[in-house]
Every structure is written in C-alpha cells, then in structure tokens.
Image (cartoon, rainbow, N blue to C red; front, side, top):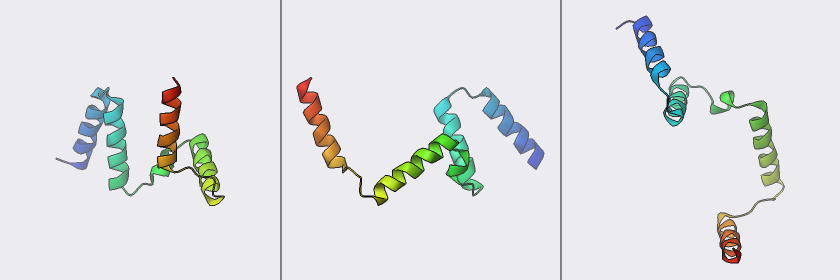
Length: 79
C-alpha cells in the first residue's frame, strides 16, 4: 500500500468513528509516534491552568492525595 493509500484508509477510519474516547486515543497515539508534544493540542485556557498549577506547586500550595481522601470521607459522612 502506498503512503497515499494509508492516509486515505486512516481518513476513512477516522471519519467513520463516533467514539470520542477512541478518537482521543488515536490522536494521542499518533502524536506520540510522530514526536508531537501533547501540549501542542491544548487550548490557551488549558495551558494557563497548567501554568497556574505549576506555580502553586512551586509555592508549596499542595494537598496530598491521602489528605484529599480523608477530607472526602469526612464530607461523605456528613451527607
């Protein structure tokens, strides 16, 4: 099969797909194989949120997963 035929088949498969999770996985896989950075596909808002989170981490404003679990359990007990 030629490169053009592979591209055509890929387009057909993608056009026929309706499963968002499968399409997202295909995109992630293609990006990894082609050496693209996952950050290339994020919106400015998403990149801003990541930057904000990184700044919070640098400032020590973090909560451990065990602390989150404990707080969630306390919250659920109140319900």
